Image 1 (cartoon, rainbow, N blue to C red):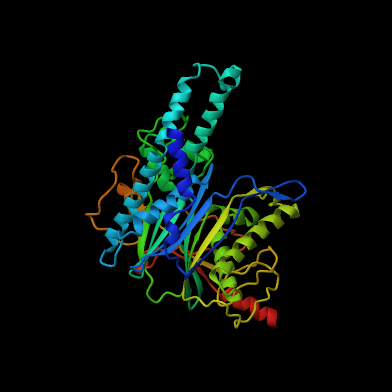
Image 2 (cartoon, rainbow, N blue to C red):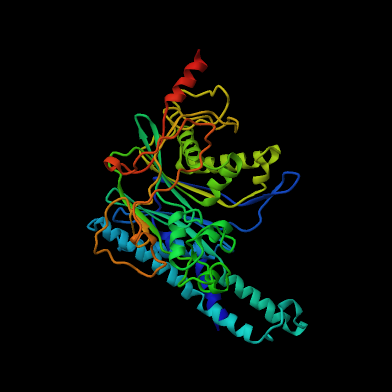
Length: 492
């Protein structure tokens, strides 16, 4: 009966109620499946596509966007996209709500999605327990007699149903304010046109074992944070927050460096930012899966992936006539850079033997599309140029060009419900949980990240400012002064 019920649920997933939701025409999506390269340079897909996305507009002008990347299957990414849409686009959000209420609804939506997914695998968990009870205790599976083979095969299939998880980056635009909710390692960038160039802001923090707040949260649970940081991954994933992943959520007591935790160390509680006012903003929002920026970092080294991707998008805005074409061209560009780096046999080729699924969603805020009237830049050394008043050419080589960057480091600031916020939250905002693992910065606020690992030999010294001085949000400003100087040399 349990198998029949799951079969019916799977058949229902072939067509989704979200198929009838109006798509946002102000956004575009590009994606590419994973690749693993052989010695002769041929690429093969190692697993079905596990990324998914959404870009909807409700009747009350509420916009919802999301990029999800999964592992061990795509069932949960599809589930998260459909259920989040149901929790946010069926009248829950409206223009009369203030920022605190919008954040509360976002927090609640993620909680419902997590609980609903775990409930959806109840039948599979029950069947797993039944199958395991039919096996002799203390005997390794590979040593069991042939009569247990069918049970083992079915047990393997059930294990596949309950395994896997997903990371999610979600954006909501309501009343011309932008809200970001993040679980895991996907990223949101807000890119604004300014008099000095393109200002690139990462709106969320990566939930990894490098995140000091996450390490503090682990220490509050009684875990050895230093050891977790040293190990770097938790059950094969770098993320410290995930949706789903039953094995880690409820089997952490069997994992050596997590077994001492007072409560679940891996959580699905989102970090929420906003609302960020969009009045007068000209630029674009970028939501991208971990696979995209990781592929670029593998080829070029860590530290500048956000700026490079923003540069590519700005370039494609000028060249393309649709937002889908903009997004897909960027994904194709990163994919080509990654492949070429592997084929080159150079210093970084060893980091490029494979890449994961890649997805990018671009939402336009009045940024010029399809305009080639700006002068074309020809770099003196053919290197990478970041988008300022003139975007670089997508046909250039992958060597580096020196460009002055003025950086402001992202703050770990105040957190409520485990979520950073750029604005003060209402003290009455409900919390899902105040357990030790819920949120580290009720006790520890206004902490700052140590400077990001930039390519210091390529850039001038970075000036670190107070991110919230004069009410400014932390950002990366791509300064055009060095670029203008470089152009002058080229012309002369």
